[in-house]
Length: 425
Image 1 (spheres, one colour):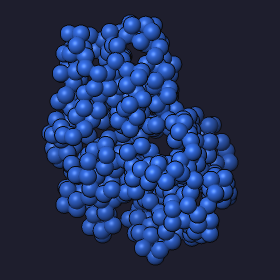
Image 2 (tube, rainbow, N blue to C red):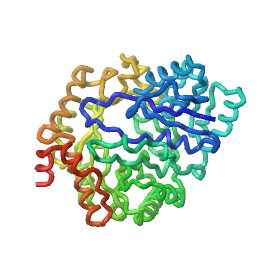
Image 3 (spheres, rainbow, N blue to C red):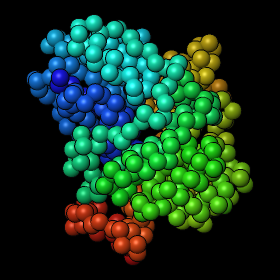
Image 4 (cartoon, rainbow, N blue to C red):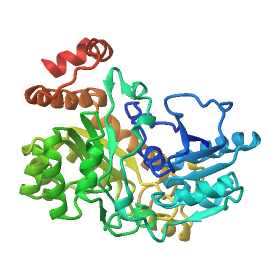
């Protein structure tokens, strides 16, 4: 059986440096398929879909709400060609009702241990309209190495720099943050993969740089320490979301190759200031993730927060506007209060205001978002700051003997003489 697996394109935010990471959801899904299924993968962000490519069925994997309308269009095109289409992924779960109008089948939940049934139903002509496994996630023991062989790796680079590989060591999250849909998607139970399974997958990844995409690594201290000890021998350099603010864990994380972390910055407290300092003291770069438009924020609060970022020596900052995604408390509250005025999912990209904030007008919040990017990157561009972080990890790799030069001349030519002068002196 030939299955065409597609990851729909989506428009990047104007303010962000444009690059494409290899998507993790589709290749994790592909690993759960029965061995007799032949898979062909197209990431529409880096290549064009060939709608005439022979296949028996199509699977559309959607992660973001901004992919939904494009995913529906793709499905409609294939169904006009009499190809059955199955949808899955995070955005499918968030927009299941609408997706059903464009699908032969919608799969909800995590796929490990479940795809044998789906494929058998497909082959026997009795595909169900909905496969709902959200209530009972599969055992983490079933999660195997992702199908990275499906990537066309040459397509995932930015100006000659090979992009990181994506990897996950756990699922679920015990936190329930106000604008986040994870509690709905995966439940509030932290589900760490067994360390031997993590090691098994790490051994299959030939890229020396990783992005650990777990919602947060700061969920279980003992598991976190065990994870970092297991990672040390691989000598990989990695990025992750928040890790535990604990000296022993930070030290182990640094030994394990921690490169930089995403850290939510939600106020101007000394706690945040000290947390950034401790990351830096352990050799981590820090990319602050700053959410604008919360109900407790005034315009002065937003300006004060932006000024604070300059004081704490952040390496990078990513500004987003609160987006009320379906199945979040933010969405439920705003629907009840009649505050959402835009239901075009293309605009649910965390860069556009789609609701009426409580203490700021929608128009002013959009202006403050633009101001935040301009203010933070006024003296140095995001691309320059990214290159500085890249150079820091290259130096570490060279010191450890793990550096793999890739297209050095292309990198110099692409980034230009000025950026090299500023970074390299």
